[in-house]
Length: 244
Image 1 (cartoon, rainbow, N blue to C red):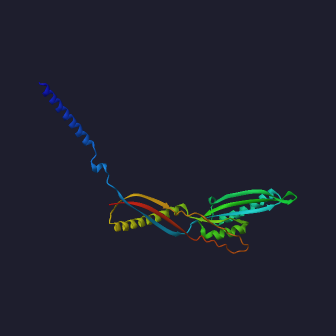
Image 2: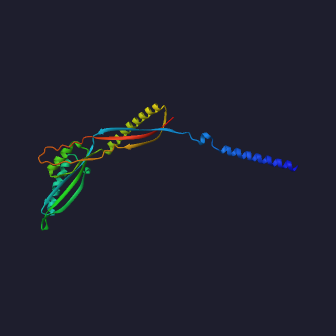
Image 3: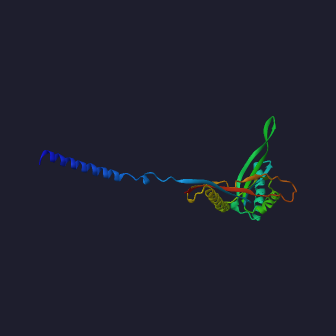
């Protein structure tokens, strides 16, 4: 074989090899449709729902403060009065688990005439009452004071966890429906079609926080009016819809 024929054969082999490499590399390149992902179009709307609800739980503090010449006398006197108060609470249907001691103290009462001297001893005992019997709040206050209580703390109202969950489900359904309605109207105006949901989030303003009302004790008053009223709760959602 001549040198020229040998060189031509070598060039042909190299050309074929280069062509094969080019074909392999080209095959590995992503097609324009795959590499350039289709642009996703979205619209974002907010939906909300609210309602007025009455609290179903109340908490209040009931206490007894007494003075006596000695610490022992003060303690005994306070215990007698507090036991009478707790018995009245139980007679109204308040359970032991809903009566919790929140404050207890025995301390000297000083008289100042140049130098401080102990004049007496003060004994205090307070219990925190939590109940769903809101219709008996007036009775709780009045019968406690009649039994010897002389300290009534602020009355607070709240929503139980069970009712909160129920309210949140109701509000969430209404808020999502509101968002869906708004998105449908917007899509129609923009001449696009909703094909899915990309993201969603909830802003929960619907947890009812306890609020306090001071209750004053009036001697001889027939009944202490306590009205829980209503509180507005709300919930909102933000939804991003995919459109085409």
